Image 1 (tube, rainbow, N blue to C red):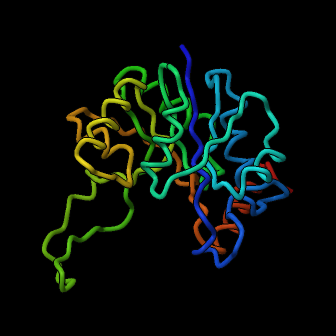
Image 2: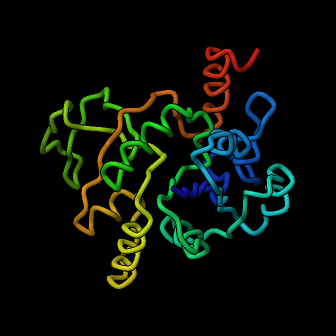
Length: 226
């Protein structure tokens, strides 16, 4: 079994209000990208890691992540294109593990549980049950429907797929000139089922400045930060 993790870190810091990549922000003395990659590099089930980043960040990322099993790929204009750039560098593997670099608090338990489900079903993604009531609205923001909350999952990453299945889904999307913001949706459009794995509410995505102290408080609660 040969598994490749694709860590997506090509985003910018616009919503953070900073000029540099948010992957280079520090959380408890380590950068976001270092923490995200470490969760995978320390697992024997992960054989190779591809970090997708902007061309301007390659040098900085390379200095932070000198492991010889980590390679770097330049990201595309969209998430799907960024993953595709990484996929095209993979000659062959069994499963690809796609993870947002901006989720530095992912645990190895979540990764392994999702991988285990994917190996049984060919496609799985971690997520958490929705806590709030969700409403569907029309163009005027008038409420038109209230989905059953017990059947709603907020999908996170990692999202893990059989490599050949994912490549087939990518090929279909390219032929149809379609671009999806979610890898699960990409595979779903092929007609394949993707299974949710209940994960962890602490697997937050670093999006705004307020997420940094939140992440540090989670690390302190875990005993990983004094």
